[in-house]
Length: 422
View 1 (cartoon, rainbow, N blue to C red):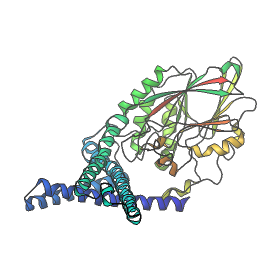
View 2: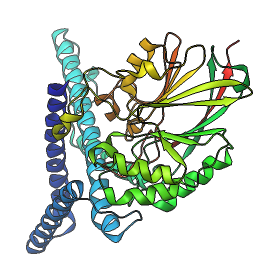
View 3: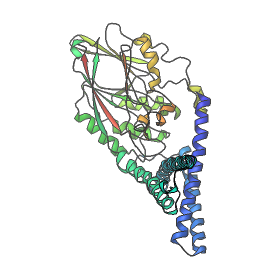
View 4: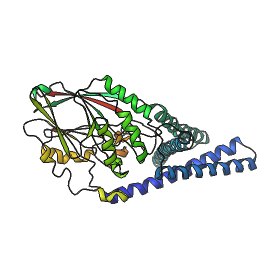
């Protein structure tokens, strides 16, 4: 899997490079048509190249040493977001341009083959179809390709300014055979992958908190990745989430970004001081009317190697978790990584709640299920999955990572209603 991921990264880089060269050429062609003065064109091209290089360098620096802002700053709005919108739009636009180019070449090949067959059959030339390689047709196809390939830039802007903020409330009814009668109709709200930062401000997190409280859940669960890279943002995200309210409390588990930022201990203490308990290979028995529901949680676990984070891998998922389970009742597991589900199903855990994937975040699954970045890390990208009597739900999360864009995977707050089967 590690070699496959490295190969995918290499291929992605090469495609990105090709897309940039394609759009540089298109922009140069447009410049020649719009600006007659050659010296002015060269000056503008040089300035554009310098701006591109600076924005690219800033993006790399931001990814490595991002700041601690939990509100939208001018740096993020002016330096970060434009380059990220350009990157996504140029990639998708290049992909469409390639598809149109291939379709055009196949059409030409088909017509030429048909013409050749006509000649072999000695059909009079008057019966020949109109040629697709005429100058007028070529111009029409070129203009169509340019318009269509530019569409993704508009779509990317939509994903940033609207899709990223259009939080959906997903209501799910969960049938559980072993659910105690006293918990029939019990409602659990799940939030995941907050990623507080410039493009998921503390104000926006508090808005999601208000949406969650308005659902009046019996229990709220949080499934990790409260921050991205910045340890300095943990206090703000804890403060924002502290407004969550439910009769049975607020519980959670930690994600890979808490581990990578080395804040697992500190953020757990901060949450604890605000009445939110992180379950770190721990379980809590929820009781009502003399009956019990068992809620468990684990830190982020992965068997895959992530560059410098190889020391965080495990040999086997959910090692020792069977000791946290309660027989004869419903066991619910909070695990940021949905890849633990196979092992959870082996153990007989009734319901697993996960996040991690953002539902793909920028996904073209409406074209083909494999066109989702989430499939690079798991086959459990979003929604419901079943193995025997065990169930998994993968929440799409609220925040974003790498690019502040959501396409085909809107942010989500999930409300589950537990019901007895039958």
